[in-house]
Image (tube, rainbow, N blue to C red; front, side):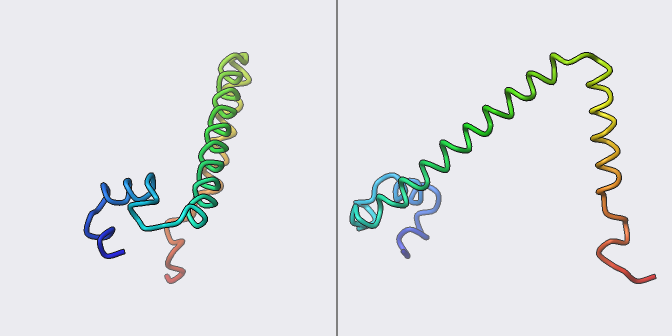
Length: 90
């Protein structure tokens, strides 16, 4: 572990992609690799889905897009905390 900390980003990258360098058995390494890969793939599916939604919004009529924009702005203003938010004093 100390060797990993001293090595920085390069060491972390090598350790994540090559379990043998970290002295990990495949039995320990494989489940985490599978879970991480599944999350990575799912995240990319979600990004692709969001991209499709964005493309469909671009194809909407102008009044609909304007109304959605106003709705986002209003929601942002309502959801924004007040300037005194972290401090409830005078």
